[in-house]
Length: 441
Image (cartoon, rainbow, N blue to C red; front, side, top):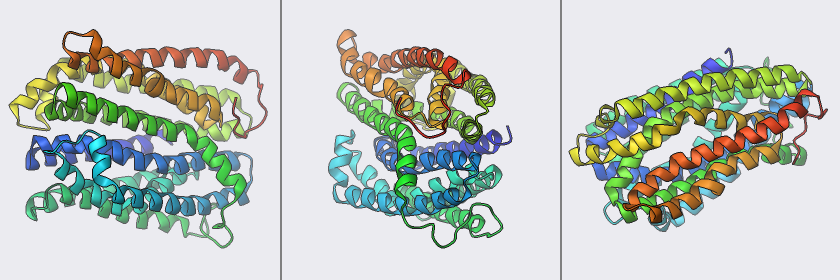
C-alpha cells in the first residue's frame, strides 16, 4: 500500500483531469468537439505507447537492478531513459505533424470533427517530448523508492491543467486548442518538479556524468520488458480506430461521442487499477530479483483483490445510473439518450477486467516478456478486432454488434489470462527460474 496508494492517487488525479477536460470541451465546444476528442485519443495513446515502451520497461529494469544491488546500472537506466525518450518522442512528433490530417481521418474523423481534432492534436504533438520525459521520470521515481514524490508530480500537473483549462477555453476563447495547451504547460511544470529530485546527489539514483551514453544491455532489456505495455497500448489504439470507424459507419459522429463518454467513465477506474499495478511492479520486480518468490505471489494476490473491487464500482455506476454519468459531460439530449444503453452493455463485464490487467502486469514486473506480450495482445488483437468487424453482421442493428463486441472480448481475454496464470504459478512457486533477466518464454 505504501507504493500503491501514491500511484492510485496520481492515476486517479490524471483520470479526473481527463474527465474535467472532457467536461470543459463538451460543455464549452459542443458534442462534435467531444467526438473529435474521442477521435484524437488513439493518436494520443500511440504517443503514450512509445513513452511506455521506454518508461515502463526501464522502471521494471531499475527495480530488478536495485534488487540485484547493481547500483551502477541502476543509474545508467536513468540516463538512458532520458535519451531514448527524446529520440522516440521527436520522431513521433515529426511523423504526426507531417501526416496529421490523413491520420485523423483514418482514426475516424469526419468533415465535421476534423478541424477540432486537428487543432487539439497539433498542440499535443508539439509538446510530445515533454510528455515522454514526464511519464518516463515518473515511472523511475516509483521504482527508485519515491512513490510519494511521483504522486506529487502528477498532482502538480493535474492542478495546473485544471486551473488553465477554463482560462484558455472560456476566458481566452481558445476552444480545444486551449485544452491542449493547458495539458502541455502542466506537463512542463511537472518535469521541472521531477528533475529536482534526480539532481540531488544524495539520492541513490541521480544525474551524473557517464550515464547518458546509450548502453546496449540496458536499452535492450528495457525495450524487451516495455514491449508488452507498448504492444498493449498500440493494439488498444488500433482497436479504438477500428471501433471509431465502425461507429461512424453504423451510427455517425454521435455514436463516436457516446463511446467517448463511456471511455471516460471506464478510464477513471482503469487508471486506479493501473495505480495498483504500479504499486505492485517495483515490489514484484525487486523481490523477483532477490529471489523472494513468495512475496511476488502475495503482491499479485493483493493487487487482484483491490483491482476487482475498483472495477466493481464502475460496473454498478454503468448499470444503475448511466444517464447521470452522461449528463456530467454534455447537455445534448440526443447524445444522452444514445449513450445510456451502450454504457450498460460495455460495463456488464467490468468485474473481470481488473484480474486480466493485473495478470498481464505480473509477468511484465518479473521480466517475463513473452507471456506478458501474449496477454497484452489477446484482448485487443486476438479477440476484440475480429469481433468488432464480425459481430455487426450478426445483429439486426449492426451498431449493437459493435457495442457487444467489447464485453464479449473482455470475457474471452479474462479466461485466457486465467489459463496462463494457472499454468505458470506452480513454476514460479517452485523457483523454476533463478534469474531476474527478462526471457522470451
